[in-house]
Image 1 (cartoon, helix red, strand yellow):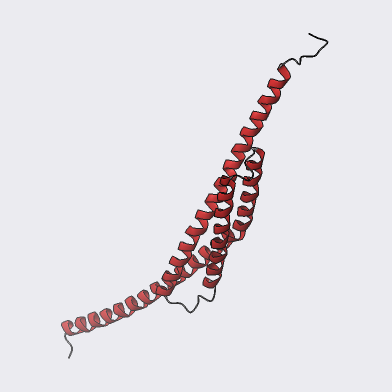
Image 2: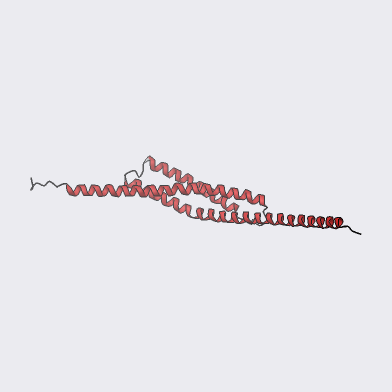
Amino acid sequence: MATVATIAGIVGMLTGIAGSIMGFLGLRQSRKNKVLDLRLQLRRDINALGVTLKHLPGTMDMAKQSRGRVNAAVGLGRSGNQQIFDQEWQTDKEALIALIARAHALEGDDLSLSGRDLELLLGQVHRLSLEAARCADKYHGTLAADDLRRSEIRAEQTAFAAARMQIPLKTKLGE
C-alpha cells in the first residue's frame, strides 16, 4: 500500500520530468527564434546594403562631374587639386566595384546556415555597409561642398555685376 509520502514523491518526480521536458522544448524553440531573428536581420541588412550600392555609382559620377564643373567655373579645371580628386575618385570607383562583388558573394541561400554562421555573415555585411556608407558620405559631402561653392560663385558674380553697373563709363564726348 502506497503511503502519502510515496505518492507525493511520485507526483513530484513526474512534475520534475515534465518541467525538464518543457524547459528543453522551450530552449529549442528559443534557439529557433534566435536563428530566425538573425536570418531576418541578415536579409534586412543585405537589402539596405544593396540599395546603398545601387545608388552609389551614380552619386560618385555626379560628384565627379560637379567637382569638375565647379573647378572649371573658378579657373581650376585642370589644376592639381582636380587631378588629385580624379585619382581619388578612380581609386574609390575600383574599390566600389570590389565592394559590389563582395556583396554579391554574400547573397545566397541562408536557410541552411546555423546561428553561428549567420552571426559571421551578419558581421561581414555590417563591415561592407560601413565601407559603403563611408564612400557615400564622402561623395555626398563633395556634392554639398560644391553646392555651397556654387552659391558663393553666384554671389560673387552678382556683386561684380552690381559693381560694374555703378561705375560710370568714360566716353570721349562726356569728358
